[in-house]
Image (tube, rainbow, N blue to C red; front, top):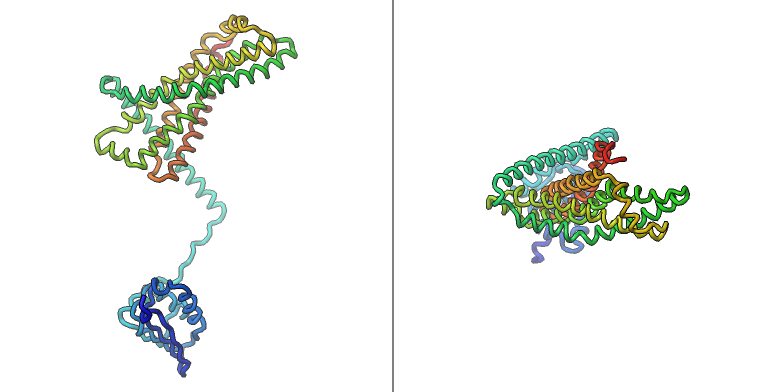
Length: 375
Protein backbone atom coordinates (compact mmCIF):
# COMPACT_ATOMS: atom_id res chain seq x y z
CA UNK A 1 0.00 0.00 0.00
CA UNK A 2 1.43 3.48 -0.81
CA UNK A 3 2.56 5.57 2.17
CA UNK A 4 0.22 8.47 1.30
CA UNK A 5 -2.73 6.14 1.89
CA UNK A 6 -1.59 5.17 5.38
CA UNK A 7 -3.94 6.39 8.13
CA UNK A 8 -2.52 9.40 9.98
CA UNK A 9 -3.63 11.26 13.05
CA UNK A 10 -2.32 14.69 14.16
CA UNK A 11 -3.18 16.62 17.33
CA UNK A 12 -2.86 20.40 17.50
CA UNK A 13 -2.95 21.50 21.14
CA UNK A 14 -4.35 24.89 20.07
CA UNK A 15 -6.20 26.35 21.67
CA UNK A 16 -8.60 24.98 20.73
CA UNK A 17 -7.42 21.36 20.56
CA UNK A 18 -7.77 20.12 16.99
CA UNK A 19 -7.47 16.48 15.97
CA UNK A 20 -7.13 15.86 12.24
CA UNK A 21 -7.22 12.46 10.48
CA UNK A 22 -6.16 11.69 6.93
CA UNK A 23 -5.34 8.76 4.67
CA UNK A 24 -7.17 5.45 4.38
CA UNK A 25 -9.06 4.32 7.49
CA UNK A 26 -10.14 0.97 6.11
CA UNK A 27 -9.51 -2.45 7.57
CA UNK A 28 -6.74 -3.44 5.13
CA UNK A 29 -4.82 -0.27 5.98
CA UNK A 30 -5.42 -0.51 9.73
CA UNK A 31 -4.38 -4.18 9.79
CA UNK A 32 -0.73 -3.41 9.07
CA UNK A 33 1.57 -4.57 11.92
CA UNK A 34 1.44 -2.21 14.90
CA UNK A 35 -0.67 0.41 13.14
CA UNK A 36 -4.02 -0.27 14.82
CA UNK A 37 -2.45 -0.39 18.26
CA UNK A 38 -0.62 2.93 17.86
CA UNK A 39 -3.67 4.75 16.45
CA UNK A 40 -5.89 3.38 19.22
CA UNK A 41 -3.39 4.62 21.82
CA UNK A 42 -3.41 8.13 20.31
CA UNK A 43 -7.20 8.20 20.18
CA UNK A 44 -7.38 6.99 23.76
CA UNK A 45 -5.33 10.00 24.95
CA UNK A 46 -7.46 12.48 23.01
CA UNK A 47 -9.55 14.86 25.22
CA UNK A 48 -13.29 14.25 25.14
CA UNK A 49 -14.57 17.67 26.20
CA UNK A 50 -16.87 19.65 23.97
CA UNK A 51 -14.19 22.17 22.96
CA UNK A 52 -12.17 19.63 20.95
CA UNK A 53 -12.46 19.97 17.20
CA UNK A 54 -12.39 16.83 15.05
CA UNK A 55 -11.43 17.25 11.41
CA UNK A 56 -12.08 14.06 9.43
CA UNK A 57 -12.49 15.77 6.08
CA UNK A 58 -9.00 14.66 5.01
CA UNK A 59 -9.86 10.93 5.20
CA UNK A 60 -9.77 9.45 1.72
CA UNK A 61 -11.38 6.07 2.52
CA UNK A 62 -13.40 5.02 5.55
CA UNK A 63 -15.21 1.83 6.46
CA UNK A 64 -17.08 0.60 9.52
CA UNK A 65 -13.90 -0.55 11.33
CA UNK A 66 -12.22 2.84 11.04
CA UNK A 67 -15.39 4.71 11.96
CA UNK A 68 -15.82 2.52 15.04
CA UNK A 69 -12.38 3.59 16.31
CA UNK A 70 -13.46 7.23 16.25
CA UNK A 71 -16.86 6.37 17.73
CA UNK A 72 -15.24 4.64 20.70
CA UNK A 73 -12.83 7.59 21.19
CA UNK A 74 -15.78 9.98 21.27
CA UNK A 75 -17.42 8.04 24.06
CA UNK A 76 -20.07 6.69 21.64
CA UNK A 77 -21.47 10.21 21.15
CA UNK A 78 -20.96 12.44 18.10
CA UNK A 79 -18.85 15.52 19.06
CA UNK A 80 -20.32 19.00 18.61
CA UNK A 81 -17.38 20.22 16.52
CA UNK A 82 -16.94 17.71 13.73
CA UNK A 83 -15.82 18.25 10.15
CA UNK A 84 -16.79 15.25 8.05
CA UNK A 85 -16.84 14.51 4.33
CA UNK A 86 -20.40 14.01 3.01
CA UNK A 87 -19.65 10.52 1.67
CA UNK A 88 -18.66 9.36 5.17
CA UNK A 89 -21.77 10.66 6.91
CA UNK A 90 -23.73 7.49 6.18
CA UNK A 91 -21.15 5.27 7.97
CA UNK A 92 -21.39 7.22 11.22
CA UNK A 93 -25.17 7.44 10.92
CA UNK A 94 -25.46 3.62 10.82
CA UNK A 95 -23.20 3.28 13.86
CA UNK A 96 -25.22 5.87 15.74
CA UNK A 97 -28.50 4.15 14.92
CA UNK A 98 -27.16 0.73 15.95
CA UNK A 99 -26.72 1.91 19.53
CA UNK A 100 -25.33 -0.28 22.31
CA UNK A 101 -25.26 -4.06 21.91
CA UNK A 102 -27.06 -5.60 24.86
CA UNK A 103 -26.77 -9.28 25.70
CA UNK A 104 -30.06 -11.02 26.47
CA UNK A 105 -30.83 -11.40 30.12
CA UNK A 106 -29.87 -14.76 31.53
CA UNK A 107 -32.85 -16.99 32.06
CA UNK A 108 -33.44 -18.50 35.47
CA UNK A 109 -32.18 -22.02 35.90
CA UNK A 110 -35.65 -23.56 35.83
CA UNK A 111 -36.38 -21.97 32.45
CA UNK A 112 -33.11 -23.30 31.01
CA UNK A 113 -33.94 -26.80 32.23
CA UNK A 114 -37.44 -26.51 30.78
CA UNK A 115 -36.03 -25.34 27.44
CA UNK A 116 -33.57 -28.22 27.35
CA UNK A 117 -36.32 -30.71 28.16
CA UNK A 118 -38.52 -29.18 25.48
CA UNK A 119 -35.72 -29.43 22.92
CA UNK A 120 -35.08 -33.07 23.85
CA UNK A 121 -38.80 -33.84 23.54
CA UNK A 122 -38.98 -32.22 20.10
CA UNK A 123 -35.94 -34.19 18.94
CA UNK A 124 -37.38 -37.46 20.25
CA UNK A 125 -40.78 -36.81 18.66
CA UNK A 126 -39.06 -35.98 15.36
CA UNK A 127 -37.17 -39.29 15.43
CA UNK A 128 -40.32 -41.24 16.32
CA UNK A 129 -42.31 -39.59 13.54
CA UNK A 130 -39.53 -40.22 11.02
CA UNK A 131 -39.28 -43.86 12.13
CA UNK A 132 -43.03 -44.39 11.73
CA UNK A 133 -42.90 -42.83 8.25
CA UNK A 134 -40.00 -45.14 7.39
CA UNK A 135 -42.00 -48.20 8.47
CA UNK A 136 -44.97 -47.03 6.42
CA UNK A 137 -42.80 -46.55 3.33
CA UNK A 138 -41.30 -50.00 3.88
CA UNK A 139 -44.77 -51.54 3.97
CA UNK A 140 -45.64 -49.86 0.66
CA UNK A 141 -42.36 -51.00 -0.90
CA UNK A 142 -42.94 -54.58 0.28
CA UNK A 143 -46.39 -54.48 -1.34
CA UNK A 144 -44.88 -53.26 -4.62
CA UNK A 145 -42.20 -55.96 -4.40
CA UNK A 146 -44.83 -58.67 -3.83
CA UNK A 147 -46.89 -57.50 -6.81
CA UNK A 148 -43.89 -57.23 -9.16
CA UNK A 149 -41.19 -59.57 -7.84
CA UNK A 150 -39.30 -59.74 -11.14
CA UNK A 151 -38.53 -56.02 -10.92
CA UNK A 152 -37.34 -56.29 -7.33
CA UNK A 153 -33.80 -55.44 -6.13
CA UNK A 154 -32.61 -59.05 -5.97
CA UNK A 155 -28.95 -58.18 -6.47
CA UNK A 156 -29.01 -55.70 -3.62
CA UNK A 157 -30.70 -58.24 -1.34
CA UNK A 158 -28.22 -61.01 -2.12
CA UNK A 159 -25.28 -58.65 -1.76
CA UNK A 160 -26.46 -57.50 1.66
CA UNK A 161 -27.06 -61.08 2.80
CA UNK A 162 -23.46 -61.88 1.88
CA UNK A 163 -21.96 -58.86 3.61
CA UNK A 164 -24.23 -58.97 6.67
CA UNK A 165 -24.57 -62.73 7.08
CA UNK A 166 -21.66 -64.64 5.62
CA UNK A 167 -18.95 -62.17 6.58
CA UNK A 168 -20.24 -62.07 10.17
CA UNK A 169 -19.84 -65.83 10.72
CA UNK A 170 -16.31 -65.55 12.12
CA UNK A 171 -16.93 -62.90 14.76
CA UNK A 172 -20.23 -64.44 15.93
CA UNK A 173 -18.59 -67.87 16.19
CA UNK A 174 -15.69 -66.52 18.24
CA UNK A 175 -17.87 -64.59 20.67
CA UNK A 176 -20.45 -67.38 20.89
CA UNK A 177 -17.80 -70.02 21.65
CA UNK A 178 -16.22 -67.90 24.38
CA UNK A 179 -19.58 -67.08 25.97
CA UNK A 180 -20.46 -70.78 25.97
CA UNK A 181 -17.15 -71.64 27.66
CA UNK A 182 -17.50 -68.91 30.31
CA UNK A 183 -21.14 -69.72 31.08
CA UNK A 184 -20.38 -73.42 31.33
CA UNK A 185 -17.46 -72.92 33.70
CA UNK A 186 -19.37 -70.58 36.00
CA UNK A 187 -22.47 -72.76 36.06
CA UNK A 188 -20.47 -75.95 36.58
CA UNK A 189 -18.77 -74.58 39.70
CA UNK A 190 -22.10 -73.74 41.34
CA UNK A 191 -23.88 -76.92 40.28
CA UNK A 192 -21.02 -79.13 41.46
CA UNK A 193 -21.33 -77.61 44.94
CA UNK A 194 -24.92 -78.87 45.22
CA UNK A 195 -24.42 -82.07 43.27
CA UNK A 196 -26.50 -80.93 40.31
CA UNK A 197 -23.97 -81.58 37.55
CA UNK A 198 -26.52 -83.13 35.21
CA UNK A 199 -28.54 -79.89 35.11
CA UNK A 200 -25.75 -78.06 33.31
CA UNK A 201 -27.29 -79.12 29.99
CA UNK A 202 -30.59 -77.49 30.96
CA UNK A 203 -28.96 -74.21 31.99
CA UNK A 204 -26.75 -73.95 28.92
CA UNK A 205 -29.47 -75.04 26.50
CA UNK A 206 -32.18 -72.69 27.74
CA UNK A 207 -29.94 -69.65 28.28
CA UNK A 208 -28.14 -69.91 24.95
CA UNK A 209 -30.97 -71.02 22.65
CA UNK A 210 -33.65 -68.74 24.11
CA UNK A 211 -31.71 -65.63 25.21
CA UNK A 212 -27.96 -65.33 24.76
CA UNK A 213 -27.68 -66.65 21.21
CA UNK A 214 -30.16 -64.21 19.58
CA UNK A 215 -29.06 -61.31 21.80
CA UNK A 216 -25.33 -61.77 21.17
CA UNK A 217 -25.82 -62.14 17.43
CA UNK A 218 -28.01 -59.03 17.32
CA UNK A 219 -25.58 -56.88 19.32
CA UNK A 220 -22.65 -57.95 17.15
CA UNK A 221 -24.60 -57.31 13.95
CA UNK A 222 -25.79 -53.92 15.25
CA UNK A 223 -22.21 -52.85 15.93
CA UNK A 224 -20.79 -54.35 12.76
CA UNK A 225 -23.45 -54.16 10.05
CA UNK A 226 -25.74 -51.48 11.48
CA UNK A 227 -22.92 -48.97 11.64
CA UNK A 228 -21.86 -49.92 8.10
CA UNK A 229 -25.39 -49.30 6.75
CA UNK A 230 -25.59 -45.89 8.44
CA UNK A 231 -22.14 -44.94 7.18
CA UNK A 232 -22.98 -46.04 3.62
CA UNK A 233 -26.15 -43.95 3.49
CA UNK A 234 -24.36 -41.05 5.17
CA UNK A 235 -21.56 -41.07 2.60
CA UNK A 236 -24.19 -41.16 -0.14
CA UNK A 237 -25.73 -38.06 1.44
CA UNK A 238 -22.36 -36.29 1.63
CA UNK A 239 -21.52 -37.13 -2.00
CA UNK A 240 -25.09 -36.16 -3.09
CA UNK A 241 -25.80 -39.64 -4.48
CA UNK A 242 -29.16 -39.69 -2.67
CA UNK A 243 -30.19 -36.48 -4.41
CA UNK A 244 -29.05 -37.90 -7.74
CA UNK A 245 -31.23 -40.98 -7.20
CA UNK A 246 -34.29 -38.80 -6.64
CA UNK A 247 -33.51 -36.82 -9.78
CA UNK A 248 -33.36 -40.07 -11.76
CA UNK A 249 -36.68 -41.20 -10.28
CA UNK A 250 -35.21 -43.98 -8.10
CA UNK A 251 -36.89 -44.48 -4.73
CA UNK A 252 -34.66 -44.55 -1.65
CA UNK A 253 -37.02 -46.95 0.07
CA UNK A 254 -37.25 -49.51 -2.73
CA UNK A 255 -33.56 -49.52 -3.67
CA UNK A 256 -31.78 -48.78 -0.38
CA UNK A 257 -33.99 -49.49 2.65
CA UNK A 258 -36.08 -52.51 1.67
CA UNK A 259 -33.12 -54.66 0.45
CA UNK A 260 -31.24 -54.06 3.71
CA UNK A 261 -34.26 -54.82 5.89
CA UNK A 262 -35.04 -58.03 4.00
CA UNK A 263 -31.39 -59.09 4.02
CA UNK A 264 -31.07 -58.63 7.78
CA UNK A 265 -34.43 -60.32 8.42
CA UNK A 266 -33.19 -63.35 6.44
CA UNK A 267 -29.59 -63.42 7.66
CA UNK A 268 -30.23 -62.86 11.37
CA UNK A 269 -32.12 -66.14 12.07
CA UNK A 270 -29.34 -68.04 10.31
CA UNK A 271 -26.74 -66.22 12.40
CA UNK A 272 -28.75 -67.04 15.53
CA UNK A 273 -28.67 -70.76 14.68
CA UNK A 274 -24.95 -70.52 13.98
CA UNK A 275 -24.22 -68.66 17.21
CA UNK A 276 -26.34 -71.11 19.23
CA UNK A 277 -24.50 -74.08 17.77
CA UNK A 278 -21.01 -72.70 18.35
CA UNK A 279 -21.88 -71.49 21.87
CA UNK A 280 -23.24 -74.93 22.76
CA UNK A 281 -20.06 -76.54 21.41
CA UNK A 282 -18.00 -74.25 23.64
CA UNK A 283 -20.20 -75.05 26.64
CA UNK A 284 -20.02 -78.77 25.88
CA UNK A 285 -16.21 -78.65 25.73
CA UNK A 286 -16.01 -76.77 29.02
CA UNK A 287 -18.48 -79.16 30.66
CA UNK A 288 -16.36 -82.11 29.59
CA UNK A 289 -13.23 -80.56 31.11
CA UNK A 290 -14.85 -79.22 34.30
CA UNK A 291 -17.42 -81.90 35.17
CA UNK A 292 -16.45 -84.79 32.93
CA UNK A 293 -19.76 -84.75 31.03
CA UNK A 294 -19.20 -86.51 27.72
CA UNK A 295 -20.23 -84.85 24.46
CA UNK A 296 -22.52 -87.81 23.66
CA UNK A 297 -24.40 -87.32 26.95
CA UNK A 298 -24.66 -83.59 26.29
CA UNK A 299 -26.11 -84.09 22.81
CA UNK A 300 -28.46 -86.83 24.02
CA UNK A 301 -29.94 -84.75 26.82
CA UNK A 302 -30.11 -81.42 24.97
CA UNK A 303 -33.38 -82.05 23.02
CA UNK A 304 -35.20 -83.05 26.21
CA UNK A 305 -33.75 -80.13 28.18
CA UNK A 306 -34.76 -77.51 25.62
CA UNK A 307 -38.33 -77.87 24.26
CA UNK A 308 -38.86 -77.10 20.60
CA UNK A 309 -40.79 -73.80 21.12
CA UNK A 310 -37.60 -72.23 22.45
CA UNK A 311 -35.92 -72.73 19.09
CA UNK A 312 -38.82 -71.03 17.33
CA UNK A 313 -38.72 -68.16 19.81
CA UNK A 314 -35.01 -67.74 19.11
CA UNK A 315 -35.60 -67.69 15.36
CA UNK A 316 -38.46 -65.21 15.76
CA UNK A 317 -36.17 -62.96 17.78
CA UNK A 318 -33.63 -63.13 14.97
CA UNK A 319 -36.16 -61.91 12.40
CA UNK A 320 -37.41 -59.06 14.61
CA UNK A 321 -33.94 -58.02 15.75
CA UNK A 322 -32.64 -58.00 12.18
CA UNK A 323 -35.49 -55.84 10.89
CA UNK A 324 -35.12 -53.44 13.86
CA UNK A 325 -31.37 -53.04 13.32
CA UNK A 326 -31.82 -52.36 9.61
CA UNK A 327 -34.63 -49.84 10.15
CA UNK A 328 -32.71 -47.94 12.83
CA UNK A 329 -29.54 -47.89 10.74
CA UNK A 330 -31.39 -46.64 7.65
CA UNK A 331 -33.30 -44.05 9.69
CA UNK A 332 -30.15 -42.43 11.03
CA UNK A 333 -28.32 -42.84 7.73
CA UNK A 334 -30.96 -40.86 5.85
CA UNK A 335 -30.96 -38.10 8.52
CA UNK A 336 -27.23 -37.44 8.26
CA UNK A 337 -26.36 -33.97 7.04
CA UNK A 338 -23.79 -33.43 4.26
CA UNK A 339 -20.77 -32.97 6.56
CA UNK A 340 -18.26 -35.31 8.20
CA UNK A 341 -19.16 -34.32 11.77
CA UNK A 342 -22.78 -35.34 11.30
CA UNK A 343 -21.61 -38.60 9.72
CA UNK A 344 -19.65 -39.60 12.83
CA UNK A 345 -22.37 -38.55 15.25
CA UNK A 346 -25.10 -40.29 13.23
CA UNK A 347 -23.17 -43.56 13.05
CA UNK A 348 -22.51 -43.59 16.80
CA UNK A 349 -26.11 -42.75 17.63
CA UNK A 350 -27.32 -45.42 15.23
CA UNK A 351 -25.36 -48.19 16.95
CA UNK A 352 -26.42 -47.10 20.45
CA UNK A 353 -30.07 -46.83 19.44
CA UNK A 354 -30.05 -50.17 17.61
CA UNK A 355 -28.60 -52.02 20.62
CA UNK A 356 -31.10 -50.31 22.92
CA UNK A 357 -33.99 -51.24 20.62
CA UNK A 358 -32.80 -54.88 20.53
CA UNK A 359 -32.67 -55.08 24.33
CA UNK A 360 -36.14 -53.54 24.63
CA UNK A 361 -37.50 -55.98 22.04
CA UNK A 362 -35.89 -58.87 23.93
CA UNK A 363 -37.64 -57.74 27.11
CA UNK A 364 -40.96 -57.64 25.24
CA UNK A 365 -40.34 -61.20 23.99
CA UNK A 366 -39.61 -62.34 27.55
CA UNK A 367 -42.90 -60.84 28.79
CA UNK A 368 -45.08 -62.06 25.92
CA UNK A 369 -43.68 -65.60 25.89
CA UNK A 370 -43.18 -65.93 29.65
CA UNK A 371 -45.16 -69.18 29.86
CA UNK A 372 -44.03 -70.73 26.55
CA UNK A 373 -41.27 -73.30 26.12
CA UNK A 374 -40.85 -74.54 29.68
CA UNK A 375 -41.25 -78.09 30.88
